[in-house]
Every structure is written in structure tokens, then in C-alpha cells.
Length: 310
Ligand code: FAD
Image (cartoon, rainbow, N blue to C red):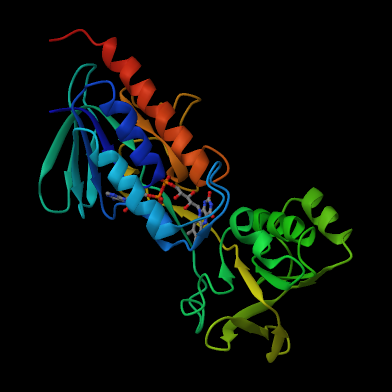
């Protein structure tokens, strides 16, 4: 059995695996796709001490760094079920889609999250070419340009407020007849001179010139008419979905599916820890996921040294 079994091979999982392996304990990582969301990212400019890198390059570096340690890497393996040990000291089980069952004295869950997509023509084609999901990451790329934010919940309105300080103009597009964000955020949004809010609008297409976004069309749901907005960027803010569906019978999750963790990354079950975008830890960023992964790993080690051998 593993001392520490990490599920997920993104920044959080890679950091957790390295911190565990450095303690000289038996460490495994199982990941559906090593690298995680970083693989889908182009420019990364907020990974402190590295002014610029690219997603695939960072993903390869994550794997390379893990491989310098004695870590059993099981890539392209999807975990389907977690069976926590029944009593203290019992092994936990992670069941893989392949049918294999991995056993471990402690588990670190780092399965990340995925941004909900609009699923309209042009969105996938212009991803990273004007279509963006993370204002903290890509906002500065649109300095002085025109952008839209799709989604009028808290994250959409926060993104619009954030971007309004950087870009020339923000159009916030909400499907419903009113914004769903907290009143205090809406009041802030309404005080900004370079933001236009459009409600009852369904985004129908992303347009581009072959290499970058040039416009967006939406359907006004009241008048059933199509409208076109010329712009350079579109931030899709219609939800970040944690990859935790497979855990709902085993651990405490929030209504949004985030794994509930305390300040040490401990979940509702002793010996099972979690880190990164899959958890309640706020602000979903690479540097944060790595820090949370390191922290959860040290907490797992602390847990293990308190177990009396049976
Ligand atoms: P993830 O990176 O999501 O990794 C999750 C891992 O778990 C993957 O290996 C996945 O395959 C695996 N997994 C999932 N489910 C299972 C399962 N059931 N069984 C086994 N394995 C599973 N952040 C920044 O700081 N700067 C940026 O510039 C930046 N740009 C971004 C651009 C885009 C387009 C996107 C999508 C995100 C961006 N982010 C950026 C956010 C950043 O990528 C995430 O915060 C970070 O990757 C989270 O790390 P994580 O390890 O928690 O999860």
C-alpha cells in the first residue's frame, strides 16, 4: 500500500507528490491527464519568479520534477470511487476505471476543476485567442481593449469590475432578466463608467478573423432579435465545476461540489486530504494550488507519523 496516494496530476497534485516523496515515504500519483488545466493554457505570466511561460511547457516541467523522485506515476487513469478506511488505521481505497484498486494509508485529492463552457460556435476555436476564462490570468492581455464578460453571477460581476480597471470597455451579458450577483457588487458595477450591462441575452456565437476574436453575437430573449458586439476578448464566467462527482458519497462537499477542507487541507474524513481547485480554498490559481498541495502533503505526513503501526 502507498503511504500517500495523490489523485490528480495538476499543480496541486504534483506539489503534493514531491513534498511526500521528499519525506522518503511510499508515494503514488494517479491522474487522468498529467498536467491538468495547465495543459490548456497558453501564456502564464503570474507564476512568481517566472515572468512568462507556456502551459504545455509548465505541464512537462511538473511531470519532470515529480519524476526526479521515487514516485509511482499512473497517468491516464481515472479514479471512480473512494472508499475511506472504516476505522482509524484502516487503509483507504481508490478504485480506478480500469478496475484496479489502489490502497493507501493517506490520500490527497487534487482533481481540480473545469470551466463551464457556453458551447456556441467559435468558442472552442478561439479559446486562448480572445476567449478566456480567468480574469486574474488573462485580464492584463486585454489592456485598453474591448471585452465582454458572459455571466452575471458573483464571479461574472467580479470579473467585470476587475477588468473595467484594465480594459477600455466591458459589456456584461446575462441570460436572466436580472443579475444574480450580491447587491454590493452590483452597486459597484453600476458606478463604473466603462461598463454596459445587457440582460435577457443569450450568447449565440463567437466571431473571429481566423486568428483572433473580433465580435460576439447574442439573441435578445425579449425581442428575439440578434445583436452583434465588436470586441477583442470574451471572458466566460458561467461556472467553475470541481471534478468531484465521484466523491459525493464518500466526503463532505459544498452545494457547488467543492471538497470541504480546513486550513491544513483535511477533509471530513481523517487521513484524507485535498488541495487545489477541487476544494473550498478560495482563488483558483496555479501558485495557490501548488501551495495548497504542499500544505496538504505536510498535513498527511503529520497524520501518518501519529499512526501507531498495527
Ligand atoms: P487541475 O490543474 O485541474 O488538475 C487536476 C488533475 O486531476 C488533472 O491531472 C486531471 O486529469 C486529474 N483528474 C481529474 N479528475 C480525475 C479523476 N476522477 N481521476 C484521476 N485524475 C483526475 N492559473 C494561473 O495561476 N495563471 C494562469 O495564467 C492561468 N491560466 C489559465 C488558463 C486557462 C485556460 C485555464 C483553464 C486555467 C488557468 N489557470 C491559470 C488556472 C489554473 O490552471 C488552475 O488554478 C490550476 O491548474 C489548478 O490546479 P489543480 O492541480 O488544483 O487542478
